[in-house]
Length: 403
Image (tube, rainbow, N blue to C red; front, side):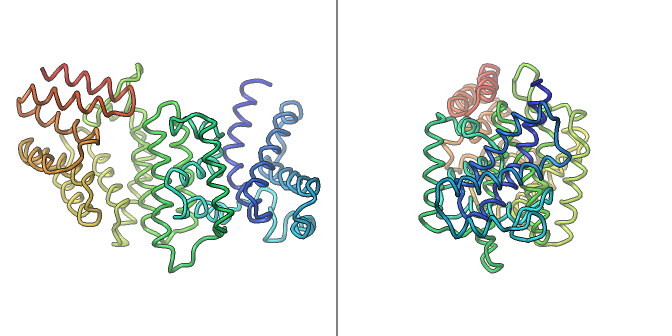
């Protein structure tokens, strides 16, 4: 099989596995049965498609094959007899409980997102299950995104699935009155998935998966402005991703990025969503973060950035989400409007000693104030806490330059 064939089948797996797993869970009521059946279907695809070519409808082929494999497994194990008899007689394409070939079963994926992100599960388990079941990542890929051994991640996933079964966590979208409380962890997990890819060059496919999940949510929940806000935020952040790194892997800060490399199509899409959110006048944290990014994207150069508007947006965001991290980012914007001394006074009030951007921000402000020794110490502290080699190298370089 050629490399092109492997890549094509891999892309299909990413695109189709989540929807098929979600549909099979609804039909058979068992995550393991659904997941194993989809894996078997793709194993068959890997053996057949290189010689036979892609079928006219790869997604439908995978759905049908996986469904048949699941039925075969239940028959072999002689269990779930009642469920098996119901599933075996499902018409392949016209019963809304079945898996119509090629028809996107987006409602099933939405149900699965809410199942993965049930509050009974830890945040780490929510992210890992979402990546595994909906993102189509292997256990090894999920493990790498968490910087743990594959065996460790396998155990975590097993425990999470057992908890879903033992706690009888429902496989459904919450009732409308429950949605505001349940939606937050779903959006938070999708955002964490994106940032896991953004901060790990080896796992940049996670950024694509997070945006895909955000698009699903935005399509299925068009009246939720925070869903739209998250999608806009991811698109605007993604528009700058290619300019964040030099060819040698070194980090490039926002003010020094080559803005000609920013993806204008993503910027225009993200800004259009932000404008629609503003017209709704139901602001939330993701919408405000997206609006801040939209202001950055409006500026042709760093000097043309409307920092006063960014400060106003951060004032609003801090009122809605009064966290130290938001306060830190607001202080950075204040520094651009009122100068580094005003910003440093705000930063030094924050309790973020174990957060490397806090020390990196202090270091930059101290450098701008000419306090070189203090700046170098802050750069060293930031570098010691930074999670990636690129960030550590960037901060160490800043520390040497500050002396």
